[in-house]
Image (cartoon, rainbow, N blue to C red; front, side):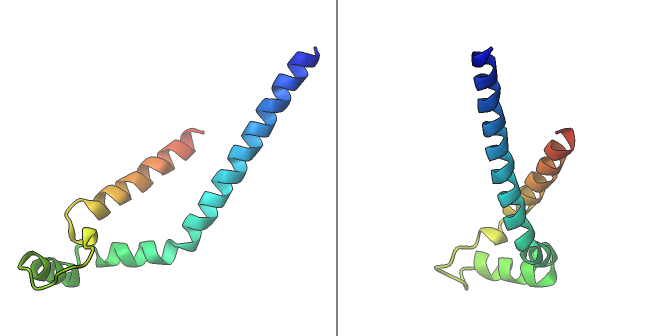
Length: 90
């Protein structure tokens, strides 16, 4: 009986810690919602295509430019959709 209580107490503690971590992650995600909206507007826009062309021609150098790849932002948005689906299943 004591073992059963201890085991379930461990489970409770672990799940509560998971919930706290998830809530913190969700709060951080919500804090960046404006950035997400702006990034979605930029991706595929006229400005994005212009920036991509200049980068590919070597006129923009020595910067991190993953945002100009075909897949980085697309994959990020797909990842968000996958997380939404996971949350719905829970």
